[in-house]
Image (cartoon, rainbow, N blue to C red; front, top):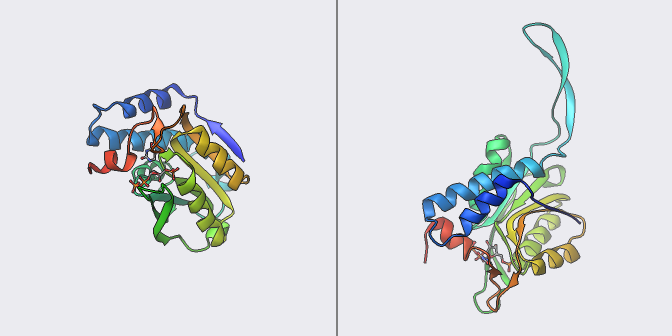
Length: 208
Ligand code: PRP
Ligand code: URA
C-alpha cells in the first residue's frame, strides 16, 4: 500500500483550526470540506487522461481530458459525508456511494447499517473518504465491502490518522492508496486519536 502524507501548508493550517475545541459546527463543516478539496487535488494527481481534439478560436488542437468511467466518491457515514462536496467541487460528474458504519461504543468494532454503491464499481476509481482513521476497523470493513462488490482501484482519504490505523489498514489491504492529512501520536484508552479533534461525526452534525 502506498501512503501519502500531506505537506501543503494550507492543509496543515486548516487541520490545526479543525482541532480547536472553540471551532463551532459551521466553521468545522467548512474546514472539513476545504481540506477534502485540497487533499483531493493531491490524491487525484494520477488520474488517467486521454487526448481529444478541440477547436479554439484560433485553431484545432489535441489536448488532454480525464479519461475512463466516472469516479465514485464513497463516504463512510456519518463523518465521511462532510468530505463529499470537497471532492465534488473538483470532479462534479463523480457518482456517490454510501457505506454506513458506526463503532460499537463497547467493543469499538465497526457495525454496518447501510451500503449502496454506484453500478459498475469494478470499472471506477473509488475515492473512499472518512476524516478519522483510528483503529482502522471502519476503513478495513469499508474496503472489504467495496472489494466484495468488485471494486479494485481504491484510494482512501483520511484527514487525521493514528499510527495504529495506518498499520492495520496497510496489513489488511496492501493494494490500496492511502492519503493522510496528518499522522497523530496514538490512540487513547477509548480508541480516540490523540491529540485528534474529538468525535468527527458529532462535530460536523452538531450532535451530543
Ligand atoms: C468514526 C469515524 C470513523 C471511525 C474511525 O465514526 O468517522 O468512521 O469512527 O474509527 P476506527 O478507525 O476505530 O474504526 P463513528 O463510528 O464515530 O460514526 P459516526 O461517523 O456516525 O459518528
Ligand atoms: N472517531 C472519531 O470521530 N474520532 C476519533 O478520534 C476516533 C474515532
